[in-house]
Image (tube, rainbow, N blue to C red; front, side):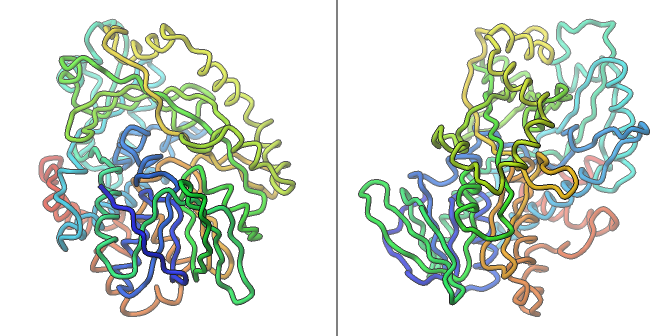
Length: 505
């Protein structure tokens, strides 16, 4: 359990807002790069990683683009676009390297507490979708990062891979699947708490729970003044910091707007909630051992790509299906229904309205999802698991996501489905907005932030050497260097206790 700290540094070098995977990753990176740096961390809840980083709140797959079909769209000419998948796969390899470094340095607990090998699979049915999946497999396996990905249309082979999904399926139905044994299951909640425990053992780092940053403004001397309220007592205090990172998940947008930096103007947020069907029958849970992703419905957000997902949560095997999308005006699971209305400002109203008009199919989709009955949800599940019984599953609320809406020079406003770092021109403040792939690519996202906000230090010989020690592939392309990829995958697989590279060649 991460402990609350009563000590306060009034003039820290860095303030991190939100005790999730992003703040933990940035804090660990900075403390390794500059051991004497002082950091204050503020979290409004009473526990770390309780929102989007929690294992039940969607962040659980090691998103490496092995199985997520929304990262490989089919282009109008019929070819499959792989650039986003390659970028995400490279980013996840950076995360693996950083975690392996932390373990080698005895900075976090043994790997089995947060990461395990599990096959990542894509599964489709229908002739058109099978044709797409075959093209996707051919396109991806041209790249070193996806070597070893298997493809099959053989029902007997698929029965061995995914018996639960194949049982009771119409034999005349055309089906196909890809399988990547290098896939992982990651408990980002456990990982985040491990990192915060380590951070707190360092001098100059304090983590405060039940503390909400209410206001922030930049002073004439360049420092950021934050007004922080202790929720239990109502006590308020002021903190002045050289650099502020807003990593508060759905709570980042309101704070970015309060910062009043020009770069934050025009940004809005569209909240999407989620629910899981969680299996309660141990026999059913044991019969499935994979993360299996399908194709999203037309008009659905990427976070709603249906998948049958094996996870290990708190040491226990779990099986989830979903997530089912929904709509709530809250920006956080523990947020307020006033979050969305309060985020609408004069400078983001037009982009939000335009994005809303352009995404009417998404709105219609979400309304239909909210109206779903138990039998509707069972029908969706049975498309994946034909013999599923409702008595073996229960509905659980998942996490809350806020998709980014931003100004666009020609289109007025667009809805973004990725993650976006927004930073001030002087590099004194940055905020992370958006959702998927999020946690899995936290290391590369934070390296990008360092390039923007710690530009001078990053160019120093000391920082460059340390980054290459922590992430051996730093500054290089794993997609273009098969030998380096094999070296880092072999090393990280060994340190993290994962499937050997040789087994998937």
